[in-house]
Image (cartoon, rainbow, N blue to C red; front, side):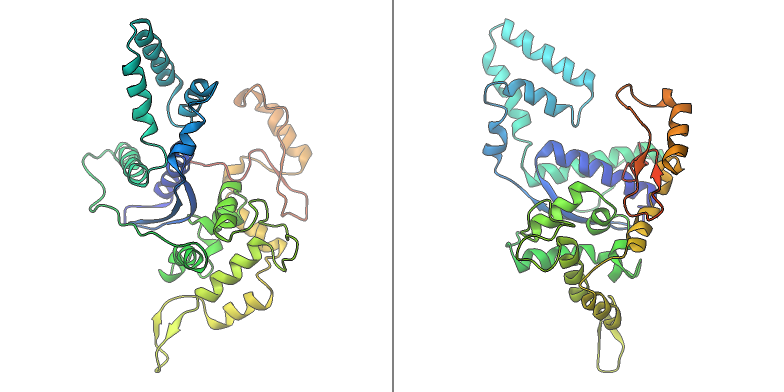
Length: 320
């Protein structure tokens, strides 16, 4: 079990950063103690690359590289392209761009780079060398609709099946918990697999009884009920029938206290917690620690009835 809390946070950070660069979409995920599960949507590469071939596309391309690479790397690549053009080596320029284009919207490349980048971080962090992963990843194509939602539930319920928590919202390193904690990217992933508008996580669409958050929570607890044999022995771990019934009877609604508790796990990320005046005072004292564009310090914690604020958004990753 090589993945502790810090390792899981680092993996998620690398995953999200590479996701944006590669053009794939992580609809949900679960990072466990010695493995991970990803539910990915892989768009059409030609459509994705087209933005870099239109007018102004080259500048968009270099800006896009900044999602994954340092400023020095991007600057060096700009100089290399300029030098090749001065020499009239246009074919080499096209080949250089093509090497990056091939990495976009490709499942195999995405997983390969994710494992490689995390392995480098892990080895550096732990002072070790060599490979980290034992086997090649396994993948399966999933149809839209119930099959997709069942797969998503399987992934988000992994920590419950493993006995790590009783409610998937309480396991910080899965897509559902990240969505409940406020991540817009995680919420969009769940909304997409539910075939709901991408902004409908906590908004009830027309002709719909439940928000995406409520609907998916009911689905999770319906799919996640534990299974027992005739003797009453548990064959498959999961949520109890009573707990599943309670969630479905309340239509998957989470109270303000429950939502706030999901944010509590991230309080240490907030640096300072308190009233607006208190947080603004800390911000003024530590002004040099923040960028010039930062105009104020207080960030509201929406779920709090006491109008609490934090100095940093509570979804900020604690691992640098």
